[in-house]
Image 1: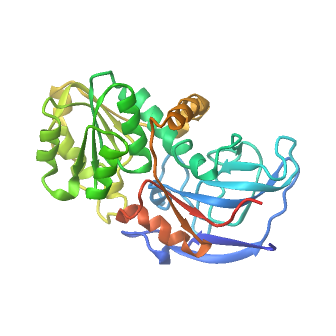
Image 2 (image 1 turned 90 degrees about the vertical axis):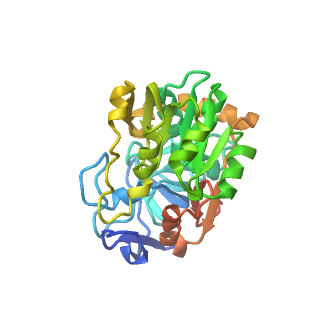
Amino acid sequence: MTVNRQWLLAKRPDGMIGPDNFKYTETPVPTPGDQEVLIRNLYFSFDPTQRNWMVDRPSYLPPVGLGEVMRAGSVGQVVESRHSDFNVGDLVQTTGCWQDYVVLAPGEGPMGLNVLPPGVPPELMLSVLGITGITAYFGLLDVGKPIAGDTVLVSGAAGATGSVAAQIARIKGCRVVGIAGGPEKCAWLTDSAKLDVAIDYKAGDLDAQIGAACPDKWNVFFDNVGGSTMQAALNHISLNARIAMCGGISGYNDIEPQPGPNNLMNLVTNRGRMEGFIILDYLHRAAEAVQELIGWVGSGEIQYQVDVQEGFDNIPATLQRLYTGQNKGKQLLKIADPE
């Protein structure tokens, strides 16, 4: 190919993201310089935090600029290399952004440039063995600190990160309660992921459902949702409980900020701890997580779902699937096969 297709950020979102937030363009395929490699993107990762990257405000990464290629994690194939550590044909994980081709040097971008382990397919590297699985691993174990016998509550439990966190809690000997939307997702949580209880928040009265599922309250809450889910969960906090704040997808597309939980004093009276975390702080320990995750996936202890859409034209619509609950597990999009 001589053309590099791209999706640019055209307009900052005001409410739910849509196709008009992005602009399609074509540029020449870039040429790598000294110590750089040219990568052809094959798969893109879609993550709730991408909505936050589109907003012009300080965060753990700079916002995507208007007119810039939309940031996204990816797996691609090296098609030209001017670096001794990378060979033509290597499959690599990086932040390739929404485009066919990207030129990078090792260490560039938030995720760097990493060759996939032998035999690991792109879908697995962008899901349970990638950032989502590593986030679940460190968020649950280092921040939540579950102890065998604890009750662990997980919101967004059928999602890419929540499902892995919930299953790690089960592996560590905890009683696990997952919150998800709809009977199909809840059935997967109990039948495939082997959680003890699945709560369907769409069935109404989440507060009462959490109370029934956690009669002795919960010890660890791994939260991906925030908002009213956090409010309901805090009504059932146990003494010395821990909350790992991973995300707040319920409010990402709101025009006005959601009202904060009005029961935060429950943390005080129960001597609880609520802590946010960012996976970038744990990347130096990624190999530790991947080694354990590979073992659990290989043994069947961790089950996972990958939702793969296809086609470069479908990229903006695929991102929107995350915020309407259409995805089942990790949301990916494929634009090409490796050669």
